[in-house]
Image (cartoon, rainbow, N blue to C red; front, side, top):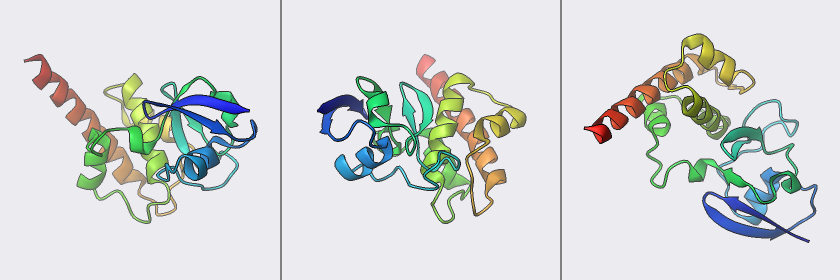
Amino acid sequence: MAIRLNVNGKPVSVDVPANMPLLWVLRDELEQCGTKFGCGAGLCGACTVHQDGVPVRSCVTPVSAVAGKSVTTIEGLSPNANHPLQQAWLEFDVPQCGYCQAGQIMTAAALLEKNPKPTDAEIDAAMDGNLCRCGTYTRIRKAIHRAAELTRAAKTNREE
């Protein structure tokens, strides 16, 4: 049975078992390989994507759970990979091994969508559960603050 969903703004239909994890549908069926496999148990955050704007762990989300819904991956975050978080990630040299980066950015994007000026404590709470084996947590926090600044500045420029 075909399952229909919207991935990165495009309607798609996949003919896969209903219980197939969304991660494998994205990577193997739709060739959206930015979303990474980490633990397979929803504990590390490497596979985080947005379902209707809410971060979810795609390794434990069956594709049937997102039928008819919108899914955004790291590839869909911005058309030119120039989202303020992506810019800030590079500015602060956050990436090390790359294992967790897509999940970290997707979780941070959901945070900034809800809270455009988070405190350190709010960032730490939102990012809790996204593991970085390289330990770049301090740089991640700085990059999130910087992305918030970039977003506010862009909004101010649009309003002028």
